[in-house]
Length: 530
Image 1 (cartoon, one colour):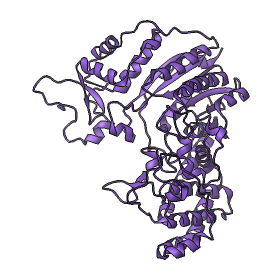
Image 2 (cartoon, rainbow, N blue to C red; image 1 turned 60 degrees about the vertical axis):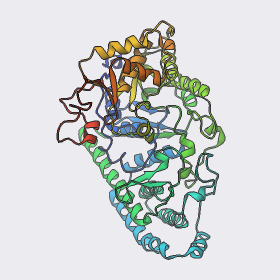
Image 3 (tube, helix red, strand yellow; image 1 turned 120 degrees about the horizontal axis):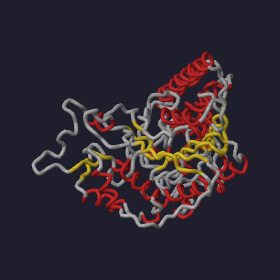
Image 4 (cartoon, rainbow, N blue to C red; image 1 turned 180 degrees about the horizontal axis):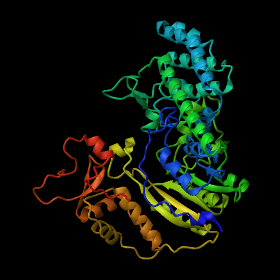
């Protein structure tokens, strides 16, 4: 009897706690990062202690790190060297003594603080002479959509000097785990000590982030800010030490209860290569493949990969699962490789085990590639959960809130080992389905992402996903035709009010901050999100 087959799928969303974990929040920025508590809950639900848990598109390592801390073998895989550097760096905080990390930071303070402070007193000639004595990265070309042509153009001379001085001092730290931890803090500092750093309006100068993470290109600030290098690094180093403390506590709790036997592994292979090596060896896979366009991970990671001397080769860049980028990868290639990646995941799973795949996109063809390939590969769709209402919004969402999908859908499959072909072209009336879903609820609010996801899964279940040919503008028009309008403040759709009634009547309870209401709806205000 396979106990894994008796697992009842998760069918409800889990409230996201993005900032509740110091090991993931504040240590190092990355393009996307799933809420650790959601990932951890899925790992605990669909796997057991000692199981091998894989994320073939590992990103910053949330899946593998949480699996490791829950006594599984967490396996991180990503073709982006930066992703693996961050994931390994956080996972390795479980190594070494906390005192070594504190001593390493003290050593760096003694070695660097005064020297970094003196950089502001150097004139242009003095800085040029200093740079001639320092180890600097290669001055490579940047992507065509960058504001500047060469790598050095992303930095002021003082920033280049400060980063080099810090990095060379870190290399002299005697305790390897602590040295790696400080290098992780240095890499996080790099995100602020460059000209793409945009200070948040109305907040402290140091509050803000790189344009790399907001508009997904190398946009140089009109008036670049030079943050104090030592203070900026020191703040990041303290975050790393806080994460170290948190991880040590988690491991100690395991030791005192069920024993500690978590493991962490890192790989840098294409997912199809992994499947050839790990055929039917995985107990659970939780993954978040790239959603197509907008984020060219390898192009945007040049900022770090150059300094860390780990730029990927062209053949690796050609295998990136995106649309566009410097390699001009086509949507046709993306859809084909998305399907191949799902097939590889199913192949790596043991029979009766589970795959959870996070995805969101307007292009129904992408969902078709995922769902059809899974069925043809011998996996059955068991749950489709919309994780909606997360307060983190991209710049794209802020610019065009109705037409950009936020949140995501977690599709969970069980490997039955019985391949099946699914029809795609049965008739499907989108307007009728939208109207039926909207009229069947007593709520007066609904997330467009949730409604869209419901339509996609309904079309799939009715063998009509190939007939679901609708643009995002057509989808929004159909919602309006059924008597709903979009609320720009809360990022969701509401029923039209009768003539004369205030549009926002009842949406925000008196005395409640509008931002809080958008991210944490009142219990008295019903919102449809499964």
